[in-house]
Amino acid sequence: MSKSNTKIAGVRAGALARAEAYLDGGAFETDLARRVAIRTESQALPASRAELDRYITAEMIPAFEALGFTCRSFANPVAGQGPVLLATRIEDAKYPTVLGYGHGDVIRGQDAQWTKGNGPWQLQRDGDRLYGRGTADNKCQHTINMAALAAVMAERGGKLGFNCKYIIEMAEETGSAGLDEIVLANKDAFAADVLIASDGPRATAQRPTIVLGNRGALTFDLVCNLRDGGHHSGNWGGLLADPAIILAHAIASFVGRRGGLKLRAWLPPPLAPNVRAALKDITIDGGENAPTQDPTWGEIGLSGPEKVYAWNSFAVLAMTSGNPEAPVNAIAPSARARCQLRYVVGTKVDAVLPALRRHLDQHSFKHVDIVALPEVARFEATRTDVDDPWAQWVVRSFTETSNEKPAVIPSSGGGVPNHLFQTGLGMPTVWVPHSYPGCSQHAPDEHILVPVAKSALRLMAGLYWDLGVTGGPR
Image 1 (cartoon, helix red, strand yellow):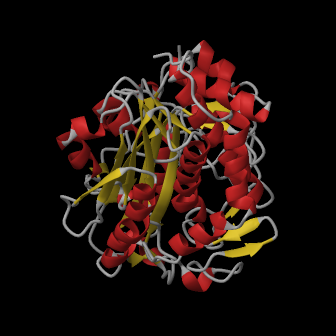
Image 2: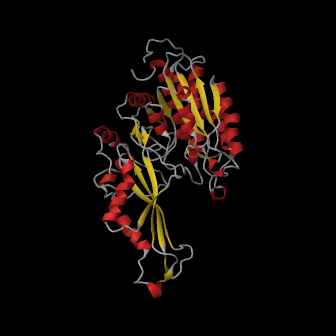
Image 3: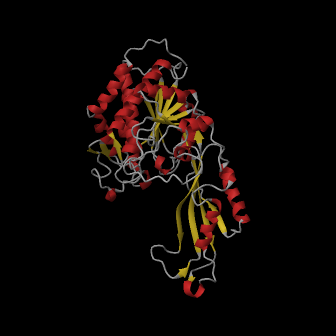
């Protein structure tokens, strides 16, 4: 829908300057500090339940109402979980509607493990870093987007020039419990033309990034249980099968020594040319505290970005046999490995475990059981096409603001509820992350970089401004 002939007051540069002034004048840190101070640990239920509610009622509803949004809070259908807020501003039925998303809940504070700042619940600045739980994930990110909306409205005399809806959920860190049920039961209320949301890190701190989907995650256990109780390794070693050795060989039968997948049923379709082209100029850089990458690990013939953003990977998340904390001279009776397959769009995920069962039987590993884990959240793989008009429109807007083509990531590694918006609501999805890989997300000393926040404020003000002028892709 084009609005190129509509006369709208204000100038694009003015909106960008207002967004920058929000940070430079100190209002950004004031708002973020107040929000970080609310201990919204969704993993600490039921003790944190009142704080999850308070974040919505005391912070989000007043902030959105000040922008002219109508707010509706949905009680979570999953017992004990936090609410979901939908803020809605409809200016004209002819305008396009953009849906935003953020989450106000955080993981546990891990208070005693912080070495920087002043603990998880007090925003603390150290140079260009702002420390505090939720700074990167996700309070800073929706704070930036809300400020960009305000900057555009201030420059346009109180108007956006498009319709906007915004979701703030309070259970993302527990697998977005209840979000699907709420949204799918109220499709009309949440309906929009496109999702433009923010979560996760950029490819690098310096380069604006858009993400078009996410890899899925299937988690399961492999268990080799041979007998009841352990037996003396001196008296029985060489006579009793060792379950840990059997399990190690079983895993090695379907994953190569360099991490490549051997099972054909676990492989995705070949990389599409536009996906490969999008990833050609991307570098993965986690910053000064990032681990050293191993270029020889993973699928042979793929670049690092292709391995992470466009291919399937397998990991052993944990593995036990006996008692590692207090080992004894005994052959353990069993061994267990918690396993995970991260997969991209096109993978036949329902065939993954049946194919593994057939493989283990064919290779004489009948004593290795596969245990499905329905209680562990399974993320679905989703991806908006790289050439989708909305994706390319955001690329153009960001390029105009930053004078640099943004990195385009087809599928991130993080677990976001993208399937709900793309499949459940049937809209293209474009994620715009405002953090960076070295932000210590989900760890002590979580932080954001002030230069990245300023860049993000400009990008989002420019994007929202352009929406009011063009209505999105023509």
